[in-house]
Image (cartoon, rainbow, N blue to C red; front, top):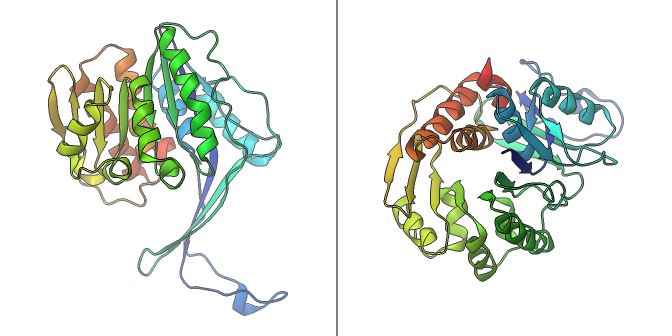
Amino acid sequence: MSILVAGNAVLDVQLTVDDDQGFEDGFSGRNVGFLSQPPNVVLGGNGAATAYALGRMGIPVTLNTTLGEDPAGDLIRSWLTQAEVSLAAPSSSSSAVHVLRIRASDGARSTSFFTGKTIDWSVGTDGLQSGWFFAAGYGGVAAEDFDALIPVLERVRANRNAVVFDPGPWFAASVSVNAFREALKFVNCLTGTEEELETWSSKQGADELIDDYLGLGPDQVIVKQGSRGASFATRAGERGHVAAQPVEAAHAVGAGDTFNGALLAGLYEGRGFEACVGMGVARATTAVASGRGVLGAFD
């Protein structure tokens, strides 16, 4: 039994800036911003970060992602190699890079995102039987990518695999309510934030969202609630909430991916569902407190 993760891999570069320098032609003191803190370079991407967490927890995992033969790709590969993550897909022409500028005075953010290539969801699925398949939305994903995902989920389920799906915020702009809800009949475990899951439901709040989505086919639904922890329920009647310990967070980038990795590790090990959700909340909290995302969740 093994876990196949399908999603993107991103080099996250986080800059804390003290001013709003503008753009000027050529070199000018007006277009140079000085940093009081060093840049923070971490592993991002719902696929790579989730797979890294699994690998660091000793779970055999294969990652289907797109990585370029470029400096960003080389650095990401080095982190994945340290975690003993196997790569299923061949190298791409470029890697995804996300630059996040955070204004020190008020926490306002500005983002620049090169999303890289799209994911071929089918890579690595032919030999997967009686295992786990995790798929997640990613920056730049489009309606046609969701359409391509549905037959992959159906085939993976037919081979006695369990499917865990996290849509993230990325499908919201391109996938209709009906298409999304119909696809959930191929999903065993649905996980997402409260805001994300409200996109395809007329319900609001964790409890109502959970009941709505359980009626569409998944056996388990998790609503991630940031610093409040996570609420969950199963078709078998288990229901609860796991609270998170409050932390002074440098940033929450990678918390959801770390949660997913720890959740999958618990499911793979056959733990009770509440225990699996608790593992996710605990690891995500550590990632946030570290200020280094998933890389800091295992220091």
